[in-house]
Length: 263
Ligand code: PEP
Image (cartoon, rainbow, N blue to C red):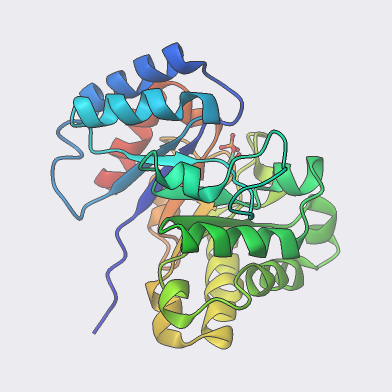
């Protein structure tokens, strides 16, 4: 029997929107998407605001009955302790956060996060009952050197190391070629499909099983917009998108979600 994977569109706001702006954005999204989101099992949408906005966005989504999931952009692997400035996975779960982005390339590049640290975060997110969105992807230099397959497969294997089969099946992997993030350069649908299918899903099949690989949702990320989402989702191994710039404005993000549903 073929596995049905509900597409997941996630808006990564990065360090944008204070909590007032966040409330306005999700209220407008709720209004623009109320018909699109009312049918269960068609599409899943999440927003990932900065930590300071999470409580406000949580209460807005819940009080206005907006069918958008709450996500975070990061967490620390330890449950508590002397880690000034950090936030534990359990603290996010208490705010009804359901998805946590882990290992985004900006965190790997700007904050020195290693595969081992990212793997510890994946485990912490799962232990707290949430779903990690594990980000992987190659730089332009790595792509040009023919290293995409090794880099992406290595990050997937390391990020999911030591995870039980039942948990692995619930994970989301976001393939984000670093050269396409925030640059306006999008990988062609065929390029994205090759990596998502031949490297991400195949690595999961190799490390776990074909059944688990078929259950895992794989997002593409990198300059996704309303006008390219349909082509990407038409690929057999692309099950959604991690969206940066085009998720900040409610009109743009709603148009993107609507284009995804229409695809
Ligand atoms: C991202 O940061 O995850 C991302 C994909 O950004 P953008 O959509 O702006 O390229």
